Image 1 (cartoon, rainbow, N blue to C red):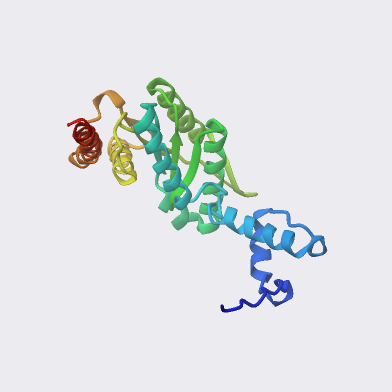
Image 2 (cartoon, one colour):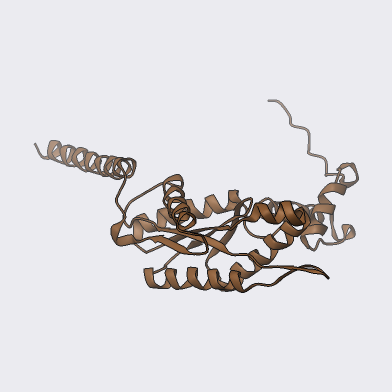
Amino acid sequence: MTSVAPTSPIDLNALRLNDARALLDHGGAQLPAPEAGSLAYLQGIIDGLCELSLRDPLTGLANQRHFRAVLAREIEIVARSGNSALLLMLDIDHFKQVNDTHGHLAGDKVLQAVARCISACVRPQDTVARYGGEEFAIVMPDCQAAYGEAVAERIRQSVAALTIVVSPVLSLQVTASFGGAFAPMWVRSTTDLWIERADTQLYLAKAQGRNRVCIDHQQVISVSAEEKSLLFSSLALVDGAWRDGLDSSMQRFS
């Protein structure tokens, strides 16, 4: 039998932790002091870095990786329970002009202000994410049509009413366009299909003049061919398993 050498304790002094500590300090995480114990100290760094890996560093919102995980989980819930869930995508109108005219630092302040505004308008159970660039996403579980429309309109009005102080001599105002789609109930869709539906409505809002909300209502959503395939393939597996079980039972009594 081969003997296994005992594992030696981790020497924290041998780890390159300066960059990790800097990231955690930037994110506002609190670490135990090194003398509090090597394990607790290392665990604090690991936990903090895991949290940072799910956050957008500029706005503090969920990043796209976290957003997609939440979306996939919500699809499973809707497919099993039939609960209503809404995905909202919003895009800051003419954001490129802000960067081109006032610089990227001004653009960053606009993004941060809009992120805070969105977060103040939603429920604790809703997930707000920075999808990329000047685009944001909101996943709203247990959301009926009237409530989803009201929240989207409230965010739109709140963003338009913002006065964003960029410098002592410069303040900016922006608007946003919104596209929304409800997840089809009792159907196991995909994250890409759900995002595509919301994006289609977002493009429609922009084409109609921007600074408006367009939502694909649950009642008129059509199930795509891919979603039908996902649905009926699952039913076929269940039906096949049931028939196999029935055949096996019949053989025992024959």
